[in-house]
Image 1 (spheres, rainbow, N blue to C red):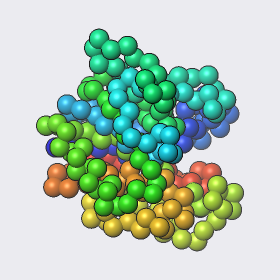
Image 2 (tube, rainbow, N blue to C red):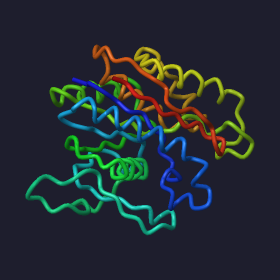
Image 3 (cartoon, one colour):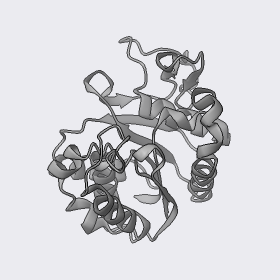
Image 4 (cartoon, rainbow, N blue to C red):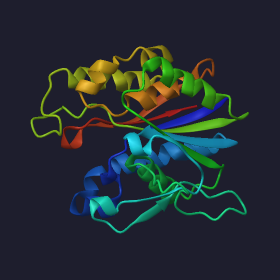
Length: 243
């Protein structure tokens, strides 16, 4: 059963070495993510599942110990998603796949926070995944253990300003405000009802992971708190904690 969840944005810029001179601009976001992870640890989970957006090559399960890196962003930093099972040699996947960027950011956040409170597994989900399927996946995650925690990675719209990756879209601010309200109040029904087509048009990578969260949280009776909300670089970044 789901006992806690943390919702964090997933830009590689959260890693200071990637952001370089712009690193201080996201200090508040990093601090909020650390606080959210602290609440996850306090929930004493048996299992932590990290869910984040992924392109085709990064979709599907990523077992404990899977490696990722930020070399694609010009930084020689490696990360690992939790620790491999005892007796297994941690390292790259046998199939050669690395963590998608969203899960690599999660791995960095967990390492930065010194996570050692429960085994960690990852799941990359694709933007086209239908809401119904996202919810089913979440329901399955919630049933994985007696006490399950989720770390949900994903961004809101990327269309908040003229210089945003998706240019300015007047619908973006309203979309982000509703997402912030739903995540901040643990409104499962609102997350399930998110408009997938609009989310795709606004380049909101968090839609599918958030709906996985909604499926996992159904019936769990969790409350929410919004810890951070801003749109640096024209992209909506949200941090929330459910417990």
